[in-house]
Length: 295
Image (tube, rainbow, N blue to C red):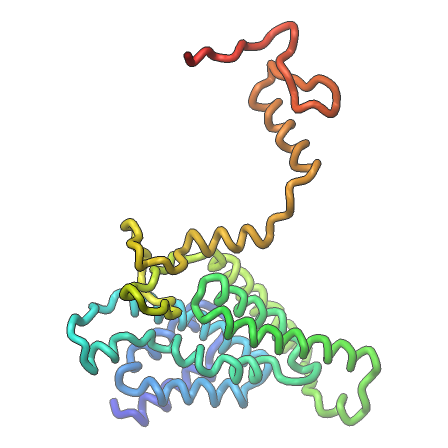
């Protein structure tokens, strides 16, 4: 099959893309199959459809890119690592379409969430995808944070515009969604959010191996290593990523935590009860076990 036929068939698959996993995986498999032959052309097709498609179709493309990045990283991890430092080794260092997504991330978000009220339906889903990429370190978190700031500014601008009221010309310029389109969007959102909840677990990523004395570059590709880390391998691992996420979302120790600890303590040791309301608990006078002598 020549590149023109590959491009035309891929465009046909993209235009029939829906929120179902069967449809998404079909396009993902086709894109990876012909990446070596015409990956750049296929990426141009994705960007073209993302620019001229409907609002609902653009968010479908975004979720397709999420699955495409995940599958690309898996395919990257199964590639054999060439020993020689040649053009072949440099070509094998790519992560398929993840590099394209990272390069054109701002343009993708501009297309999926356009300026104005017409982009608001895709705002929440886009933020969820970006947060998922940042949590799993699929894309450099700094790039994701820059795009998230743009979305936050756009959301505030749209809120101010809706509060002040829009002109008749702006109302006529906004696309009108029929009842069928709204119902279809609700069903697709339900399918997408269900899939996104299943994929929110942090996947293990390997630390980047760098030589001593060299700066550690951002490297999200590869499998997790269960061997002990050497002195040079001090990059983030999956456990560090999960710890940072939990640390940022956990509140400080307070009285409610003390109450929870005391309740769980009484459930585990029914023969123990608290004396008063302020103490940390003591052994009941009528019964209870003495501390074990370990000397």
